[in-house]
Length: 214
Picture 1 (spheres, rainbow, N blue to C red):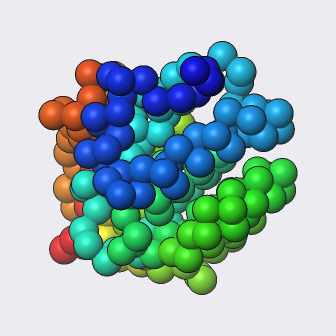
Picture 2 (cartoon, rainbow, N blue to C red; picture 1 turned 120 degrees about the vertical axis):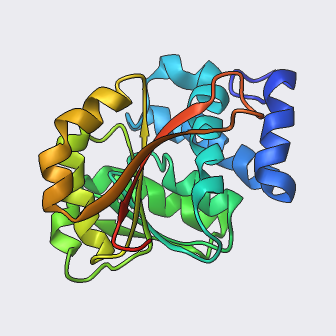
Picture 3 (cartoon, helix red, strand yellow; picture 1 turned 180 degrees about the horizontal axis):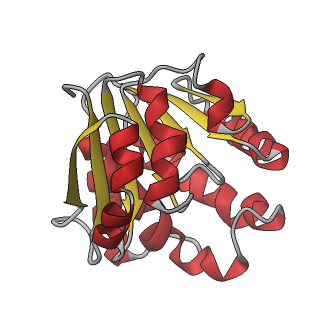
């Protein structure tokens, strides 16, 4: 069995999350485990845990996004979480924002190979797209602390919407330190949510920040 293949433990969760699009998810993981490693998007040590630590950890957060939403994923890197959302939720319209050219090229190749028609890639920093990108939901994972993340994500909502930041155990501490930035960017509510509690052995911690009446 290939090192990145689905284990029996993860297969049930993957079926629940991806349904009849599981084959696409498996092809995506195949890209991560080969060209993704070769081009430095992930470290080789991550291959055995691509499903549990990365793909499923991200994909379960898609349940928090309302149907038919427009989504911007800031600092997409290897497509985590943005591409997992595009695969699991074909109803979403997703924009991946990534500053590094080599990552953008790789993302484009994967999107083309998987024939995903609900996702596009913009190369640049999110600040460059504040005027041009207006979405319902912004997502980010492993980009920066919330105090900085608020400034580079919330303006993409243009006054109404929500940020879903995939975080770890420091979520509460980050929220405390980000109060000034959150107020400055019009945050109206902040909460810590758990995604995948019924699906994963280690559920995903998500900080949801609402702006306006969203």
